[in-house]
Image (cartoon, rainbow, N blue to C red):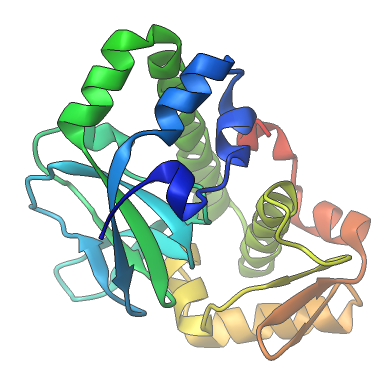
Length: 240
């Protein structure tokens, strides 16, 4: 379905979060023609090895970047919320070196690369804003390397919950201290490099320590300060 970003109601908070834009710049972004597609859960938006022609904006749902190992195991590289543009780098990289997939039923806006390039040429500050967004992505990757490479299982689990809670809160997607997280323990393990047993034990320990509560996918942060300390979580790397 052809539309404009303004018509499909993409979250404007992303623009404000990554950098200031003037009225004309903001209007130009919202006027971009897009193709809106619905994807089922666990569906590839773009696959490793594809030659992409569009940038994807997540409008609704939840998605992840990932790579598949030769063994068939998946390593999740990052999670993405509504308003995120997970594949801006495809503007300059001719072939995808990873996949982008939904985790739940999701709605995605696809913008042709040539339209994005025309926008950047006309409004250079928008190009700078997009560049900053990719730098924040790189900061998140660096933090994940440290967390997965140097933290015990419970520290990894606590850190990911801190990151997601912080990002959901900034996006206005929390209610009180709770947010809906439609992830299985296997998917958490794919992100954290942990087995199902390790993930389950870590979650149960965080519950027993009175730091979190999880019921039907609703995660409640019972003790935010305690969870931060358990995770050694400093949100500076998120730059929001």
